[in-house]
Image (tube, rainbow, N blue to C red; front, top):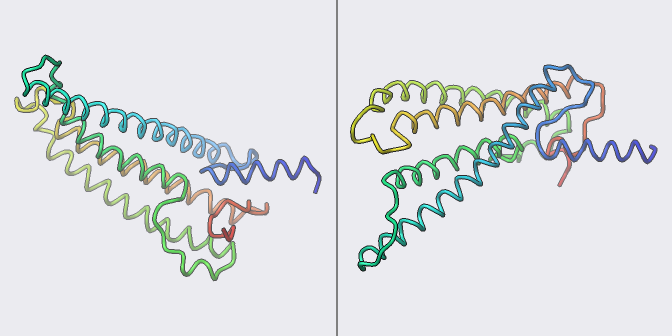
Length: 213
């Protein structure tokens, strides 16, 4: 193998290890799906950072304001919506983290069986397990959407007038969170099936169990 070919192979393996990607000569719809999945992963990473900053900043503001004001020192009081933002930011962190873990194939899994199988067999098994996971997450998404419709009427209540995150918006977080996880699962299935039917050699780091690391 030439140096150029070795470098190209290493780059391909690195990209596969980082998340969803496919060779440039695969069909355009598949490249589009992987590109969209990678864009979503960038937004998820940015969302994780934003939520962490929001939680730390608002919690510190509340703590400082509460203690200084109680001691009759002047300080700007935290806004009324701060509690809601803190609660929902923690909630969002869970979904952002779960979606990103799905993108990188680092979600929770049991690999006791896969370690005794060949690479192609492991990949085929991952297709089956991911299809099952996609079905479960799709069910969760549908159930979350039903819950969202139930609480939608509460959005106009006076008690939530000053809240940035009303009950309906909080419920929509669940719907969107599960939907994004389901999308990442769908892309993973498409990629795995693509590699199974492809005549190209499977990148060494494409599937974590196949690398032996």
